[in-house]
Length: 191
Image (tube, rainbow, N blue to C red; front, side, top):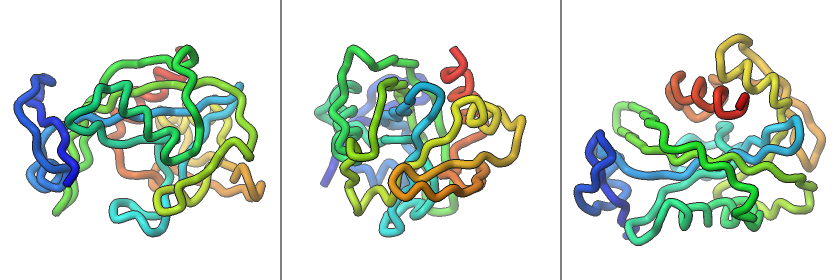
């Protein structure tokens, strides 16, 4: 059973618990959120239809829980596990921790999301997707994604990097992060 660190609302460590317990009882815990950027595009993950939580929804390029015996930087393993991308730490831009809450009837996700921007050039062949986690990778124009996150526009067109298929999406097609989370991402992408 995977254990994660539990914190109070001020990000003070309390103890370790299972991930299921943290989500069932609504305990604060750490995650990493890594947004990949390529010039004027942002990469989005479409979650696998097999995922237990939020199947087939769009999400952060790579994200995951930081285990009890890991540092925040160790959590960046998720980029390689989910996408097959080896992170060059000199290209990472740490943005700090953002509080992110997803509250559902049987799911209480209280995260200190340690957000990173990772800017590089990527080719479709660079991505080796973990099929039980990731259905596909899409690109969206950075300026339009910033407007979507800021709720200045309701839809953007994104494109599957492998098939070239385009689809229009809004925030309702994403994992239901709080509006304040998306607005903070817009700020990070703007600076």
